[in-house]
Amino acid sequence: MFCEKAVELLRELERASDGLLTPYNEDGVRQVLGELRALYIPNQQDANISRAEERSDLLPTIKFRHCCLLRNKRCLLAYLYNRLMRIKALRWELGSVLPNALRFHLAPDEARIVSVLYYTRSTYSLWEQPLEWFNQYGRSLAKYMHSIGSEGLDLVQDTLPPKSLFIEVRCLQDYGEFEVDGSTFLLNRNTQVKWKFNDGW
Image (cartoon, rainbow, N blue to C red; front, side, top):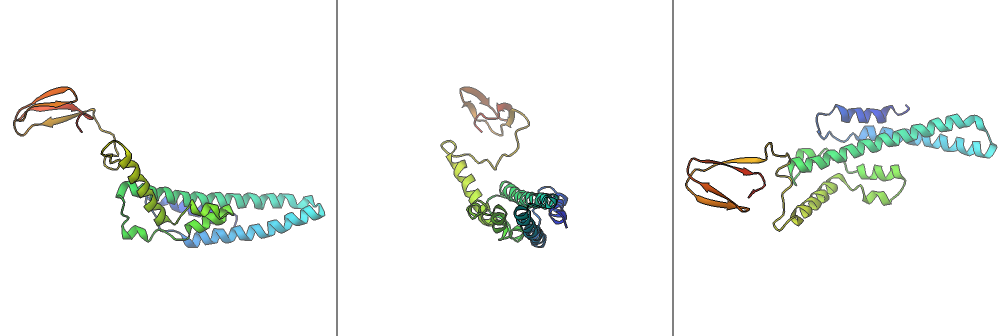
């Protein structure tokens, strides 16, 4: 009982292959929430008895249950946060449109569970529905990319750094002189020129 289901949720994520978004384990999350309720109610009763009757013999049990509550909460939040980071990675890998096969892996009640764990309503807006969060993240990313420079910059296009600082350009036809950032190149048919990666690209 004590934290086993919560740890199993994390193991399930760890077993998933690199960054794969597994289906939301609603049953496992409900079991962890049930365990939280099962630990919280007797712990609250024992804490009230200990305070009212000044019984110190209940303190170790109260502390143990409280530690289990905190661990379950941390594990559940880690599970949900890890899923959120995988959804974020999907935006970078797949673009702004999420395939229908992956839409079924998103659960509508993930946001509600996070708000229950924090015991507040204000955090609900921070953890929106996963699909809404994905769309909002995509809009924020697109807005940022359009704000860079005069024409914008597509950050999704080149996610890996170049292997070399130079690009080898082969001319297929006679072009003549070509000027890039103050440097002049003679581009004749069947010649090769090395350009710095950021010159003109």
